[in-house]
Length: 138
Image (cartoon, rainbow, N blue to C red; front, side, top):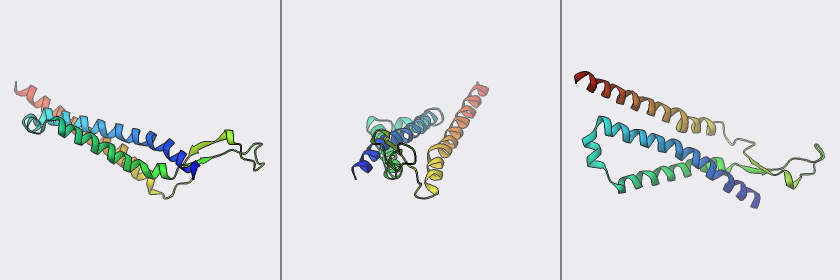
């Protein structure tokens, strides 16, 4: 049980940090989009409380999303000499050697790589179109 808990504590912050970084970039992009395309709407919603709620929500969502990966991460050992069956305690490493289900990695890739990339792409295209239309009318 101790090894599993150590692996959980080792992997959870790493995975959560990756997830929250991507989500924070999406949140900043959305704020930029609102500032450029809907400035009055953003002004009505602006405030420190709103920003804190968004950041807390991103961290909580990242923590929940990273938990399955951390849960299935275990401490493994290499045999020394190789093939002897004697696990060397100095060779301990944390890894998810067996996936519990096939869709865990695919869902993670979709939610934290493909979908955020598409959202950011759409937001910046719309911002670019808005800026180019504003420049062409002036």
